Image (cartoon, rainbow, N blue to C red; front, side, top):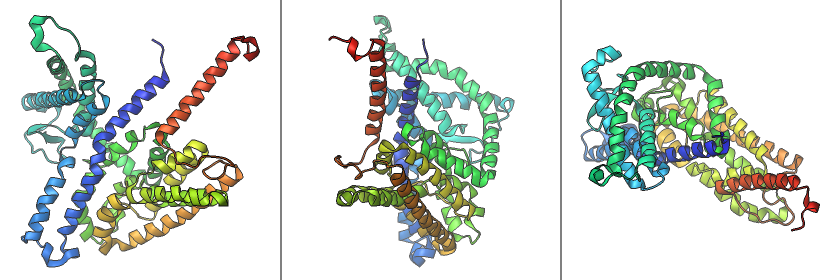
Length: 466
């Protein structure tokens, strides 16, 4: 069968979108954890937040519940992927994936219990962070994090799509539908579990080396990471860039989000520079382009529009920019200029990487992947301001300078290249665009190219009678 890159890209995009299903929970619960930690901080609230008070006990309970999504991250990915990837009976696919993943971990647990030393694993040690072991649904097993969860869930979905509707003889009716899928998964998990026991301990050592390399890459590493996270947004592949860093083990065990929240009290009480306490946080500065870049872009498009159109343009652009700043949702603004002027998106990605790298160079680090509300205020500024106000003052000054850079660069390019951003046309519908509009435009361009090729093959329009 011939290789079709468009089909492959569609499958990858769909997979990336499916990975986002559980991720949407993390921002909300990150706020819950951060607020709970704030409310237990005597440095901010005084004696009422001391351990042993009713106030402290209440927020301790809230915090433990809020940690759910981070403590059960692998299970969330196992459950979330079938929702987006199964072609039929998604609810059944979720149950099948969950069972197959538990079977996989039971197999690994049994193998390590018997032959752990042969695999280079000390299975007698406690399953604590850094041990290479973890507990999944009370099963002591290898810590395969989101990587194992995504792989096993993907296999389960593949089995579901292949086998769920397979007809079996009547006397084998018990092995039909979900039963057939899980039985196939049971058989398949035996060699896969053995393979993980053989390979994963070495992979964990490789991840540890990678963490050191990426952290040591410094400013350049931050620039490349942030540039890729932005430039890949139109394809949907940006999920593959940030998820292993923010929610996976790429630079720190458990992911930046969970690690930051777990140590936020410690960071808040320390007077050491944040860049020394948590250099890995440079890979969570991609939200800075949302907070400081989007206002500059909105202003540039507004002042580039014809004066008679500015009121309508502003009524669309400024609310979109506010949403980007507060919530980190940039699609309505970014896809608008991507739709009419793709070159601006390339410049946007370059500036995003440069902003993150500059901030990191001047010592700014933390968990700034979202917007003002979901990360900046509750997970950084408020809890850490007392001892790290100078870092955040640096961040705001550099950020506002870059807001001006975004404005100047975008306005210059829009005017110089005569780019038809909203409000610059003579007779146009002024609107913001979505990702769906971008995909429709791309599909339309492909259709037009094919139509032109067919027309030429038929001898041109003068050669066609009917």
